[in-house]
Amino acid sequence: MKITCTGHAGLFIETAHGSILCDPWRSPAYFASWFVFPDNSGIDFASFQPDYLYLSHLHRDHFDPDVLARFVPKTTTVLLPDFPTDDLRRELGELGFRSFVETRDGEPLDLGGLRIMISAMTSPADGPLGDSALAVDDGEIKFLNQNDSRPRDFDLINAFGPYDGHSLQFSGAIWWPVVYDLAEATKSALGARKRENGMARATRFAESVAAKFVFPNSGPPALLDDELFAFNDFSNSDDNPFPDQTVYLDYLARHGHDNGRLLIPGSTAELVAGAGDTRCTVTHPMPDDDVRRIFTDKHAYLEAYAERERPRIAAERASWPRYDGDLAVALAEWWDPLLALADRIGPGVGVPVLLEIGDEKIVIDFGAREVRRWLGEECRYRFAMAHELVEALVAEHEIDWVNSLFLSLRFRASRRGQYNEFIYTFFKCLAPERLSYAEGWYAEQEGSDELIRIGDYMVQRRCPHLKADLARFGEVHDGVLQCGMHGWRFDLATGRCLTSEAHQLRSVPVAEADGAGAEVGG
Ligand code: FES
Image 1 (cartoon, helix red, strand yellow):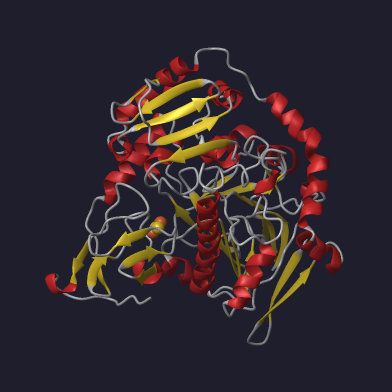
Image 2 (cartoon, rainbow, N blue to C red):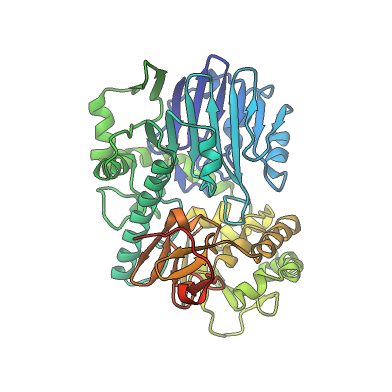
């Protein structure tokens, strides 16, 4: 099996039984904020001519309409994850793709000697209502392309293994805490925690899969616009949430794993089954010293990259559509009917959220379920953004502001109190179909769950956030249970979530509970 890195999460997987192009991305994403790191403008996407196309999800650093339209033959068969909405299929159809294979979540599929399995994650927090991982088996080599997905059922994934190669995300793709108005020391401490959590989670994934070789991918982005440039991690700062591939490979090695391999755009990894073992040969598109310099002299590399992209950023900015109507009226007409459907999201937020849009102040009142002008009241959650960005979102009727505004990092935020997941779920569900799906998903979560023993407590086995298996991902320190999937923390004595509102862990002292379960240490 030969795997070519095309940049970020992009891979071209070649086997004797067919080839798969995965997540080809090159165009700047999220209001021209994100660029591929390292630069992949030298990749000739037209040369690939794949048998199959796999798009893990609709985030714009994975789904690039321009590359798909210009370089991928429309006769290519698309391998579709088992998502709850048909947004991915519809967008591909609009680009001209006509041949689709609808996979079933976690079910292996034989494509004439090439076996695949796509694991689909479908909670409101998984990508834009759907993210996925692809497992490939060509009869000799098994490869897991996890990209930035966060599978919760590793028994299912591993039943397809054991794997020879595993690609996965390790770096931040998030706006927390960088856009928040916080004291520098606080922001530094939170950034350090974010950085450590991301690499620790990736390492848990790598250990759970236990592939022979690990390939860090899907990040970090290069942030090239002047107003975002300082967010890049130029010199391995402990508090920067965007560590690069080499930082993670060092982290892996420090944690006892010397099987990580660096890929940059144009690198190939040949995985060959040998007598009792698998060999991996990595070939880079440039001399090793030049590869190293990208990472050791990153500031100069990114400055030169930004200079090359300056005209494109300016052109993108000039292309954002304008809206000259009343934004408060437009948002109320659009969102009030959605808020009426938000029986769980509404109370889950419960308070007014302030949007400062240029000089305008508009409130999403989740308690009263209406959008209105700000009346001067205290708002615990506040987002401030440029007027032109919201104009573009309204003009295009963008139904996923996470996959546009929030990932762009082109806003400021503040909050008093905890993170509230429901706010972001609302912003990614700005259409009735999506909102109804999210509401239904939350309703389903309210069912019962198996209990396991953690220290002196019996707790629900599945994390109240997104159902990670706490027998695998739970760690206890000083009476606090931390789920390693996204780092949420729960007070064992009370079950209270210390990270986010409106989530409670079922937790009962062992002495008061019947039965026992698996012990989780830490
Ligand atoms: S599943 Fe997200 S913190 Fe547990």
